[in-house]
Image (cartoon, rainbow, N blue to C red; front, top):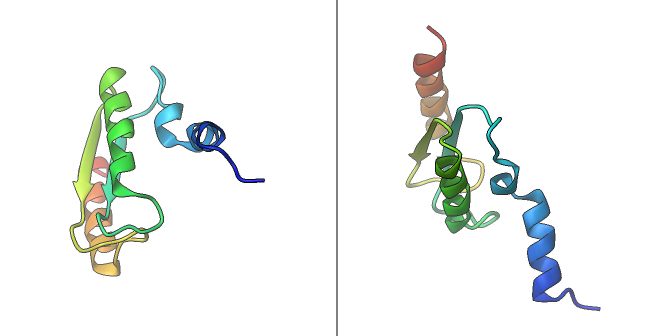
Length: 88
């Protein structure tokens, strides 16, 4: 029995980070690789929209040559960015 579009969307909505955003969400950093073949990069828009909707402080970083796991060099850059931003 194939899953229909409606059931598929319901299952995705239940695990989507965007569905978890509310007024109690903490400041968030999003790091995306547009070459991701596991999670379509376009998914980020619903998360960004919900963060804006609830006025959650957030930063979006895109690593242009990365996929789902980010490349090591870019992951190190992300750690440095986070360290500079939050570890003073």
